[in-house]
Image (tube, rainbow, N blue to C red; front, side, top):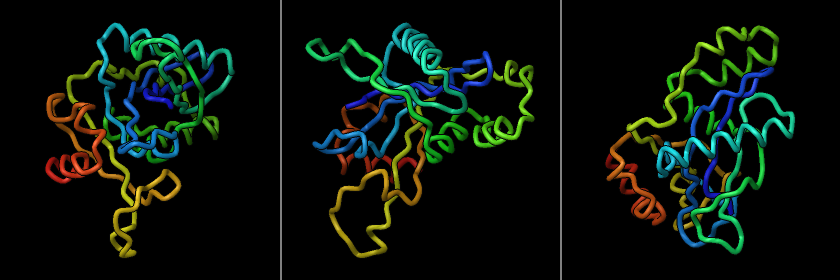
Length: 193
């Protein structure tokens, strides 16, 4: 199960670090399709976050991908949970790009569109500075239509999302220990927005 997602915007020779996010699958099921919440920045020391970004850039270079991508990290098998390894590279989902746009103040969907139609300027991309070590913590939790459909107590998966809620807060309020509990995650989201 991937636990960290390092997002990069890749254009020509540029590999711009957009953020390192904790991937949260509330409850017991830890499949990738169950990841419905993200915390940014990831709850890691600065040096480990910087190291993961460098590993992510290397993984992207080896795969020759472009656009907004998410590099997935998971704990190494047969090791302590502090050692992480790349387990995949995937295009960022639209909800994640919207979250990253809100957190960084850069419209990444627009940047991706401009890249696709060939109007993205290298100098403009070089001028973008994103602080991957920000003290401001942001949390995104998927929204599901279950209440409107009168379906109760159903765990949601990524293919059932209809939107998301975003909260900003302190690192103390938005720790991973209280975000892994579904009820606590809902309480935090509803209290902070």
